[in-house]
Every structure is written in structure tokens, then in C-alpha cells.
Length: 65
Image (cartoon, rainbow, N blue to C red; front, side, top):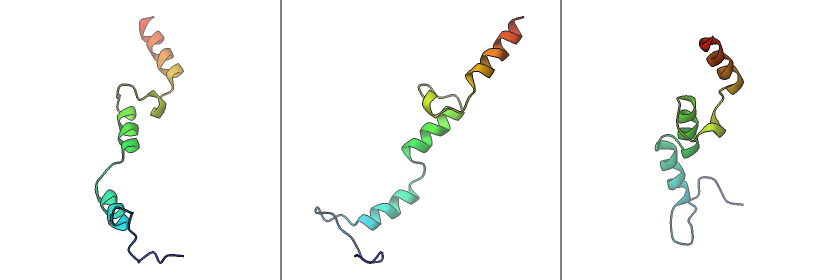
């Protein structure tokens, strides 16, 4: 078993722990961005949206009457 403080390298010599540390500092992940866009009206992000489409349809129908 490897010690978590011990440096781990890929076969190409990349320090895995350094990459993980930089990823944490880099900001939002791809999926976090997609979720944020979905919540704010992004295009093509329906799978990430928590919008109740039936509720929206009812609101639209109510405004047309």
C-alpha cells in the first residue's frame, strides 16, 4: 500500500498528487459549469436542469388566457 504523502508518478513521470492539487485550485469542473448553465438558462443542458417543465407550461398557459 502506498503512503498518501508519498509522491506518485505516472509512467510518463507526471506527479499525480500535484495534478490533483492543481485541479482543486483550477475552479469549476466541466459538470459544475454545465449544471450552473442549466440553472441559468444554458442551451442544451436540459439533463442538468432542475426546472419543472410542467409547471412552466402551466405558467405560460395561464398568461395566455
